[in-house]
Length: 247
Image (cartoon, rainbow, N blue to C red):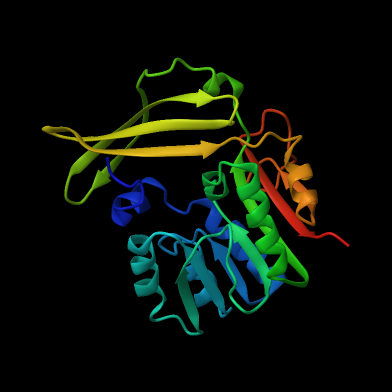
C-alpha cells in the first residue's frame, strides 16, 4: 500500500489549486507577510504568494512533496522556505501575519488532542492581530452512511506517463472516532489497480468547530460555505473559516 502523498505529480493532477489559489492569495494580501502554510504539499498555493512579494514558510511532513515545493520556490523574488515538520507541534522561532491550512489537510489530525495541539501551535505563531484561515469539508451524512466496502468513482485524470488514470475508493466510517477510512485505487489502460493508497480523514461538524478553536485560545471571526465567501449554510460543501487569537 502506497503513501497517499508519495507521488507529487499525480497529486497535483488530481488536486489542482482551483479557486483556492485566489482565495488564499487574497487572504495573504490582506494580512501582509510573513505567511505560514501548514501541510503546504508541493507549494501550489504558497509559491504564488511568495512570487507576489511576501515572505513565506511552508511546513509539511512529506519529504517527497517538499522536494517539489522547494524547487518551485527557487526563482521567487523574495525569500521563501519549506520545513519538514508536524503541524501538531512545531516551533519556527517567528510569528506570522497569516497562518493557513488548505483543502482539508487539517482533517489528517484524527484525535481531538491532536487538533487542539495544532490550534495551540498556530496561536503561538500568530502576530498580534494575525489571522488563521483554513478550509475543510462540511460532513455529509449521506456520504458517511454509504455502504462499507463498496467502490465508488472519485475522478479521472490525464497523466503524462500512465494515460487516463481512473480513481476509485472504498471505505467505512468510524462514528465513534468521526473518521472516514478509505482505500483509493488507481487504474490506467491495461493496468488495473496499479496503485493503492490509504486515506483517513476526521469529520468536524459545524457545532463542534467553534468549541475546539475556543479551547485552544482562538475565536472564529467568519465562516463561509465556499471559497467565494458565500454564507455558510447547512448544505454548504465547505467550512471556510477565518480566526484570530481570542482576547
